[in-house]
Image (cartoon, rainbow, N blue to C red; front, side, top):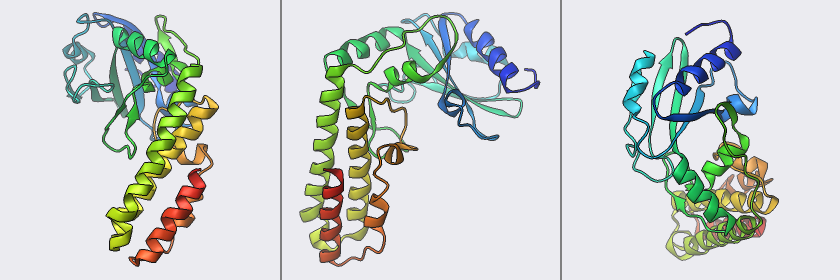
Length: 250
């Protein structure tokens, strides 16, 4: 790969990924697509295919060293697999996206239906409509992809579900942890509820979310930090924190 600059690399990488058998489209995501990347940020590419037309083993032909997982190798679900590669000095993540799966989630979202999946490094997990958020925000490098708006039914359903989850998390934490003086468990519940509540706020605004990195800030809920500051293992301190967190998230 050439090293003539980021734009040259992006165009070249998009081209070689698009040329792989079965690939219908390629998009750039993450901070590179958002324009917020730093010098050391990695490159997130999504390859879109349909059914069994794409074989991840074909990524070996690019000559980029790294680890390539099979489709479903990340446990199935929304993040059904990908690869962690290195192109020269650049770290590259490739995500696999089945267009049939995309169409299913788009139809579900239009009816206000979605599921929440566990995912490493995400406190609240990820909603299945994250694949639609990628389409709405990512930069298409090759092929044609839909650019969905935020469905009104999804706005209503996601706001209610995430908000209910946040309040339920706090309610459960009181007898299970706060009343018993479990500091770490209570603090963890508050952090989880803050992420859930942030999802609710952004859903109400019709704003897509692709990860949790700036989730709490975007929702205006960074005040949760002050609630956690100075917590002690005293039940009164922990219960008070739960009450303040619930008030903030309401």
